[in-house]
Amino acid sequence: MSLPLKQRPERMRFAGGRARQLGDATVHGTFGELLQGYRQQPDGGFEHFLVTLPVQELCTTSTVSLTRGRGGHRVQPADRARALAATTDLAHALGLYDVEIDLSVNSNIPVGKGCASSTADIMASLAALVAASAPDTPQRVLHALGTLVARNIEWGDYVLSDSITLCLQRSHTLVRTYDTDLRWRILGVDEDGSVDTAEFHRRERESRRLALHYATLLSQLDAALMMNDFATAAQIATESAVINQRVLPKRNFELMRRVAGTTGALGIAVAHTGTVIGLIFSEHQSDFAARLREAKLCLRRKDLTGRIYTVRDSDLLQPPSERQ
Image (tube, rainbow, N blue to C red; front, side, top):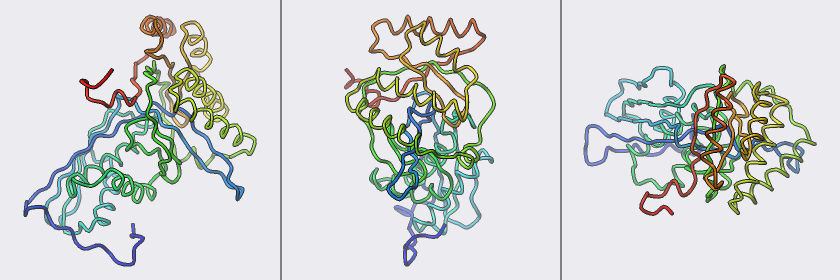
């Protein structure tokens, strides 16, 4: 990657003369997306967007070790080559030329399921490199550095944000982070198989009519999230899932709809370019726990195993002593 600058930055020195610098960072995966679509621009083109759905149970932790030398860069596991490529690109952008990078990626996010595994690997690794080389870097600068590097490697949702976020998918541009209190729990099912996200986007064909519908849904969802309208937000997630059935159908969609009707689930969430589908419940529902248990039993009768995911609300990000 070449820097969009007239001259390269000065070489960065190791802090305090230390022989090794370490940094780590954790980024959470997603249960697909709350809404994914596109809207038409004045020039006739289409701007693709998504609203993330980060969950507590899925995460990637990357650790970066920097040592002086030119012996090459290494990553474990070896198949996380894209994360290493991104980390190396960012090291060069930061002026870290005479260093060896040892990158370790530890993740429980399933690959090819639409849960942001690759994006989380990349972003966690970039954040870990910054933590090792410049630990006092402000969050806004970290976001900018992530954008600089990741946009040259893949499209993806901008998962450096801890809570629900609206972002422009193909430029890694973060538009808005929402301060929410939805208290959602998702009873999710993996339909097996995998989806190549890049190939899916290459085959995607936009429609002006659908762009108008997506724009309306985004406006409604923006208002719902701003007001913490947990029920309306779930309904919009369902509508987005319905539209997605035309291009990447989930075979259990109608079953999940029936279970939602039987148990009083608020809606359905899917990975728009993946294999997971789930029922949305909220702790704001007075009998939330009973509804969730009933839904698990319904799925079990159909030989489906559901796993519960906790959507990362703003309240969840506070220290336990400060939570309501």
